[in-house]
Image 1 (cartoon, rainbow, N blue to C red):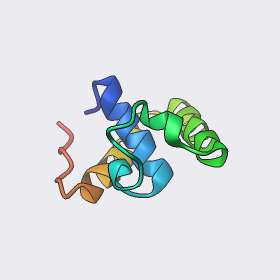
Image 2: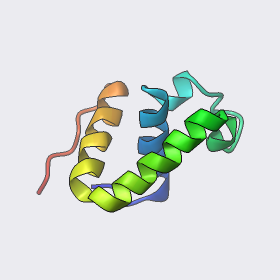
Image 3: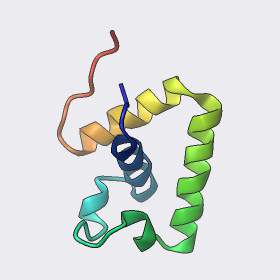
Amino acid sequence: MVRDDHCFGRIVLDSTVGGCWYDVLDRRRSPAFAQLDDGQLAAAVALAERILAEGDPLLRELDAQSLRWRGKRPERAA
């Protein structure tokens, strides 16, 4: 379950760059969203709006993919 803002940010960033965001962006430079080009930023906003519209099923799917990119196992739904 996604509970924290930073988890939502991870999911959107990872999905936007197509992998673990800190393999693409400089994790020491903050905020990470400021490092996106205009196209990436538009894609990130569109994805966040899609998550808002489609809700939990999409968010869980994207979270699971994000965790796989990081070598972690997705949490199982309770």
